Length: 362
Ligand SMILES: *Cc1c(COP(=O)(O)O)cnc(C)c1O
Image (cartoon, rainbow, N blue to C red; front, side, top):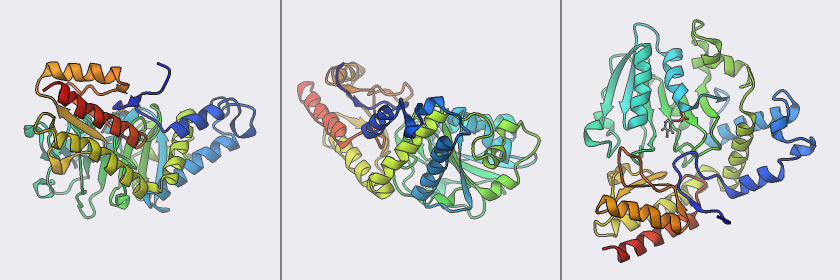
């Protein structure tokens, strides 16, 4: 392979070419330090600047002010499944979970190890073809918080509009769609996301948390698992994943240069539209897994007439320089992940491939 392919991997996933090139250019000498960012102290000025600018840019992109903090943590979104209830589910209270896919099931499972839970809505019975409608959500009497998954990476569904629950803290796993379009982030008490889908490389988890939640953080859980520890120390309590935070910092600058979230959304709608159109205009040859009003802008899941054709599709696509298209086993078929960094050109190439494949194989 001598050139870069069209990368539809689900995660870790494509990064913007500009960002990779800048990281490459700075790798031996970051900011005139005579060292790479990999080789300097997390307590040095150059790193502190990266850390501070990344927090400021993320808050700016989300329109959040002084009452929110951004934390750069480790352990993936999967550790957040446990940290959320450890910090916010006291004994005697109930945490509500909205189930819209495998990742929300996993989040619920961790909370069940820690305290009392309630399933406020689920679309499991329909193999998660859609997210629950707002009217289907039945919260418990007085939940400690309500948790949802904004984009279901495996099933290819996404909330078009988020529910509101007044003063009840709303918590979201946004691992696979954070910063893909504008949304009202101030609706959420806490948002978390593993970086490896839409923000940067694996190894960093971002947590966006409302300040007032930090005040009730219980003292009886391990120091590293308390959000307040990381907030008090600007994510520098212990050695953070410095290279990953630096890459996120470059990605955030890149998003700003794309016109922020409004600019990114425009690109994402055009990109996903190319592929959904190929599905919709195929006369049933390609069948989308998600119901149209729950379709994800980030993960496009679809089937072909049979499994043999699906295997041929994946193999021939790879030959044509289109990678990462094999679907997750719980849905089968194909999945094209078209995160922010995947270009329109790549989406056009996939669309063209889909049209040609149908013509040659039906
Ligand atoms: C990938 C993914 C996860 C798991 O993330 P890790 O960082 O591997 O723990 C959780 N939730 C969603 C929505 C995901 O897409």
